[in-house]
Image 1 (cartoon, rainbow over the protein chains, first blue to last red):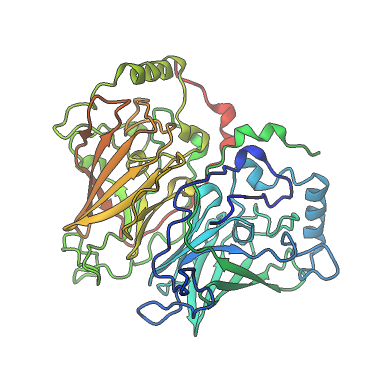
Image 2: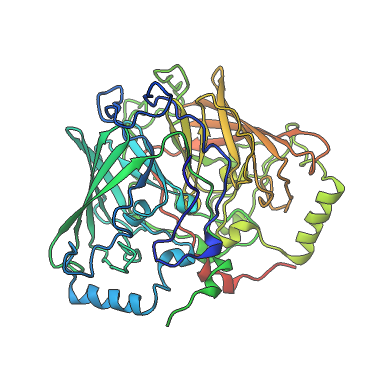
Length: 256
Length: 274
């Protein structure tokens, strides 16, 4: 059974927005999971495949927390080198104690932070579209795998527009058409509407997923950069109902 | 291409909540749709079954107020599309409420209280399917998901044979399990919280945590989906009742327009109607 603990990306926990619930289907055996003789999920079994032979990414996943919250910028070893424009925004957000992080107003973390928190998400893979259900705020995103191209003149969107294709056993997802309101990490690293994100999903075995993120945004980053994150399958459990009610919290936030 | 008008499913129209945008994938051909010789979707074709023998409900659906008998159109003069209000199966109004529930409803009317959706909280069941906004069926063998354009919300319907959890933490969309009765997809839902607002329409009818709903979805043909809901809430209604048949039309070759609710833009502009 997974712990029903959710921590906010920003580093401070906003009590009212995080609905913590016990019970539900948190102990129901997920159908189709290979099991050890004692009945426990065999998380090192081979990754499952769909009838058409592709790796099946379906499952409830959560980032494996190695080294704390994700920061793409801010130290000498960080992968991202920010432009002066992005650096100034990041400094301002930090000076403001992250008060204006979108989640404080019940707005989405966006991509990728929605999948980098210690909060689960669920991948549902079908031949033409893969849906990702995000526990936080009960949001979803879609990845079209029906061969359509990215829209040429998209209206900027919180989750952008995502198309995917398979390169052998890797699902390669390209996303563009983002608005510039999301933070790509909890440190306030910004991006512009020019951001183009490539995510490479690799299910290494039954219980382990790896996503390599590549960010391209000449306005925010001096050069494209990549980072790889690890995720673990949450077996025999499911998402909790999580709705954000910001009027409870907005008045309690501090900052400049 | 579908009409990009959205009006809110209530008596109050909040201009800032409805984000209207152009472009996107509103004209991309939906894969797998049967087509006529001229390439248009054949909306009258019989929907083929999936490999597992079930009818395929996959698609983007929009409540069809004009084709739904007994529907009450709301706010039609403000927008092209209207939400659907439920009646009972024989076309009469939703049954009267028990005294305690009626008192809550009257108090909501008296104070001009606003529905949860005015604060970016979800329409639940059945309202989420009745609001004038599209939703999408994503169907897999053990799980069907409904994605809602409005507020970017989803609900899950498990079809893997699991029963309801023994102890359900009350939830906005409750807990849904589905099964097939022939070509009818039957969804039972329990474990609701008591904060949902209505049963389709503007009447602020309360609900209790004892509510159970049974939804019966049928895909009549490629272009048409129907839904009939049975509402069983012993704290609100003297006995269960079943709704009229709600009709939905397929939005072929189209998809969602992202709709994230940003209530801080609107809170200051909302004026309760007394």
